Length: 142
Image: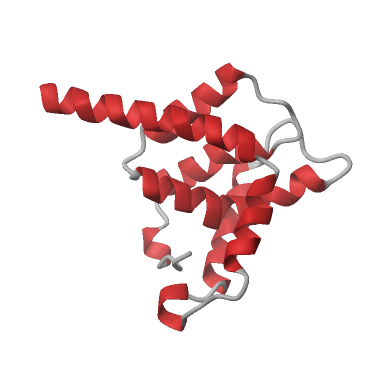
């Protein structure tokens, strides 16, 4: 994970955080839900690699715990207090890995954070790839 300068935390990035947060609600998302999340996230200007990093390094570390609770949040997260502000606080606290070298156990932490949404995330990611590919091929044909 690379620490973001807070000027790079745009409304678009916050929108992606909020869309991805739906994967951490204590519900069983339908295929239609996963497709909708993917479509909204794919519409962003972020590359596939950036979206993966946003999910694994920014959203999952904050929200994975909701799915480990006996009675986690199931309705909807509050955009500001549950998603945006905690992620911003974490981004300000975590050192820049590339600048400071190896971050102990980062890979294991990432795996644990993603474990609770692995299957749904893989489905969303496949949809995002399709959306991004069709957008790119559409732009080339235009």
